Length: 294
Image (cartoon, rainbow, N blue to C red; front, side, top):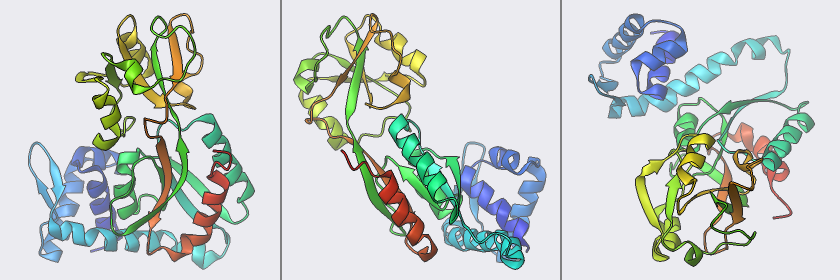
């Protein structure tokens, strides 16, 4: 066994797909599969359940995952530790979809003002993938719109974002705050899972107001959303500061803030409990990214 076996194991554990894992490693599938078989043979355990439809970690694979991630992370730090050329703390930070301009601005200020102490590398990571990316040590910390459920992770809410609706301009010609009863009889047009993250409990005020949910009406980009909303009694819910709604033609579509009957969307900093070396970064990250005006 060498560190490559563990790197290949982590790639498959991250992607849960041998083809995508091989692509991420810039190799073909056969040598990747061979390395995994070698690792399984040496450990005497099957690490993945795999068939033509899906790949999943076995209990033995789940147990190996955090140890393999720590070993590979430590190996990656050997050159800079030995050379002593860069004394900054290197942090890989996962950032989610739909970061609005205020959040991006504060994140840029964080990177600029802490650059002497931290080398922050941002990686786009969907909120639904933050927990797994942290456990596999693909990232060191993450900004997530989904509350973490893993016992080895800790989180701190940074801010709460008010939500707005987008609808055809003919429905509410005057700019106004919208309450759920105003939308009775309307249908929600939802985005992909990594954009639309409300729980069933958070959907309750909408359902109770007689608002419809149609799983066949979904979009993956702004163009798709607008086509589904046009000339229909439908609406989509987005963060008020989302870039995707800036510049909409007010003659065609309107944006209205939602009342407090609909819970806001939260943004949290999530990290591993065991990473004491990240405490100072986490403290400064929370202070600089928190919306002190909201």
